[in-house]
Amino acid sequence: MKHPSIALRSAWLASVLLAPLAGLAAAGDAPAAPCPATLQHTFDRLQDEKPQSLCQYNGKVLLVVNTASYCGFTGQYKGLEALHARYQERGLVVLGFPSNDFAQETGSNQDIAAFCENTFGVKFPMFTKGSVTGAQANPLFRQLAQQTGQSPQWNFHKYLIGRDGRVLKSYSSLTAPDSRSLVQDIERLLQAPTAGGKP
Image: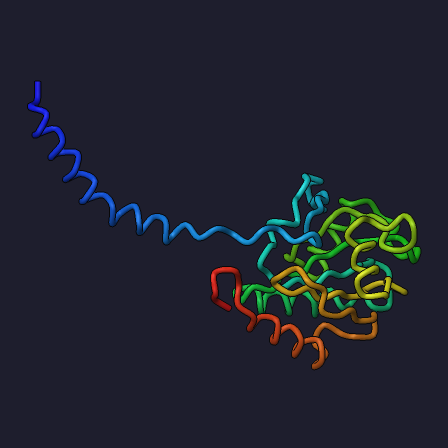
């Protein structure tokens, strides 16, 4: 059995040696920013229909787009994928929401997924087909319409959301993914610091 003074000395020595390590751990475990209300939604992924929380994109710059396979603007898929690939490492994520609200997305989720991948090589996240306008709009698009005062009037309407979950602006279908105004807005939002203080 250890003498009480030896036991106390051992406990004191352990606390002295371990205290700096505990401080380092605490410094490295900065609390993550809470998920903003804009992202507190769950949608099924297009490819396998597995539920995905949008909170996984917390701290990212998001470009939310309602899409369709048989539209005069369908070629924008190529530009959206290029935009996603160009800025992905800096924190941009394009989110695609197929919709038949304008009668130009009649296929199944599997048909849409195959079309996007095979025709345009789409790799950005896409979700299952649903409504984006009116009373039947999904909760994200209802929220975006309320915040901007603009709901999609056609396919490939776009909403740009900052790292803090605030909607910066909406863009009509006529705004191409490589539009100077859109790209400048994206680059400006990418410069904003994340919760950890880094762009």
